[in-house]
Length: 392
Image (cartoon, rainbow, N blue to C red; front, side, top):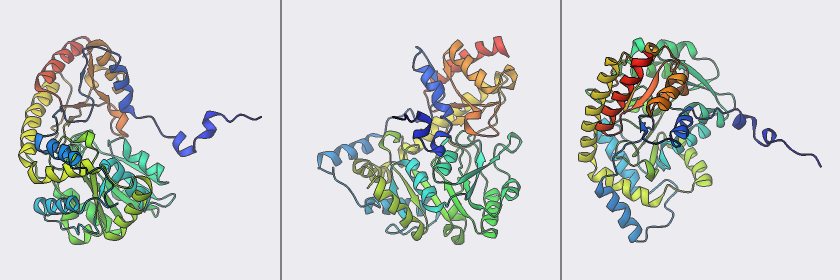
């Protein structure tokens, strides 16, 4: 009887996916003691108590059943109201909003719904590791456009223009950026909008870090113009703003025909987002704003500590204006980013992520997350100072 090798059992697109460059160093760190992690992109805050209590009440009240495939109408209306309040962009909660299992599912649904085999998606890099993989899994082709340090890692619209071909279907943007902390100005967004309209392209905008900005006003892409709203899929969620990563609740907003496509896939793969998480998210939208502001203030304090400390050590770091990441250049160490991250972890017990894990343009940098306690960042910088005294 013929045996089938492991490689033959997997589809080519799955077998060809790169393992996440983030996980490698967490796996190593898990075997070590006294590690300070500047690696994981997750708030260290516990979900605010009113939101926790809403989730508990939901369970106690027996809300343990499926909801509408779209998600509870109260949640969808809350999302629509919040976006209108913040950015003056109006969505029909009944037909233009879907609740998802985090932005990760929203991303999967979006690319699966809109891409035909071979369609090209322009993706500015460095970027979150899932973007290219989700395009590939949906049958598309990611076209990576590296941003540059001299532009503070904000994409140059001219680079997007050069990458557009007859196969291009989507321009993907994700600001504030994971891993760089970069933001995009209104002027840059308007230039991207012109390209999308000129070439009749869909724009997918991941704005999961929209509330985590410092001395900057976030630009919501579909709010720029009503015509853009009709060609944009907006992705957002509760994980970062409200410290709700484990609840797994996000959303997508867009034209009703596209959202209906997302719902069709969602109903066959997920059914509905977790009911308890939906109830907690409803409460977050009602009462969570003071907690968001408290967390932003604390992140800003940590941001200033980390960026100043890295620059003092000779690890050139531009000022991140959003999310909770710094992206230092580690050239002064004489190492590449992989070697730097591994040596720093093994020698000093500080975990960072190599920049090359986030695509072209990330080489020679590492991602350091400041969503950890101020005192731990101080200790991490102390350890990094010892490390750079040997290697800098």
